[in-house]
Image (cartoon, rainbow, N blue to C red; front, top):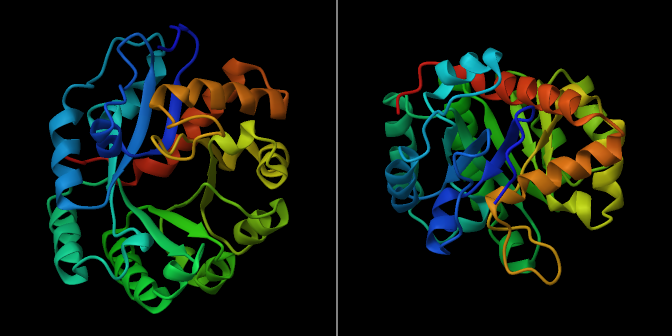
Length: 282
């Protein structure tokens, strides 16, 4: 369990609540100021998210300025939904997009995601055309509903630049677990995209590209994430949401930044990314 620190708020830009529930991985308790965005990728995952979300409401905070976070989502769990690229070829696209649009019409979402491209192996690459079809449908909805987009991109960074003109029209884009070099991230920013880049435990396993991004990119575009229960280190069986503290501490060390200063920056970045739909209904 994370230690209570009256001066620190922790922000997890990307994790999977339903998968944590499946694996009996606990969420942080009320002894920590913790905010996170959880992604769902099926109606079943969404229903689990809805059931558990109400258990993690607002607590009294030492940070008098974070009332803005309450107005954004009504609790400390922000929510997104999307068709994951790895599901291409395995799901009914029409039904899943219809459910996504239903959530959007009901004003239920803070963001659309994670959506994108995954060319990690031959099986995924074989579904490239279907991945693109799915992504275009979700991109159109992000544009239509003026919502942030959370982008999953693995072994396919060229697609980010291919879509840069469309990304520029979206309120904000989170490149989750970004695996490019700092110059690639800067190039996306220079194209006028309101982009953020989140990183998880790669900051703890000597991933040189990730560490360079965390060290060199402007702090105003950085976010911490766990991707819990996924993206665990060698020797681990999972990542827990409470591991956000370890990731935050690694960020502080890499950037040589005082914890209080970095926590304030991450709070601002998290709110700026997800505040586009302040009327989200719980």
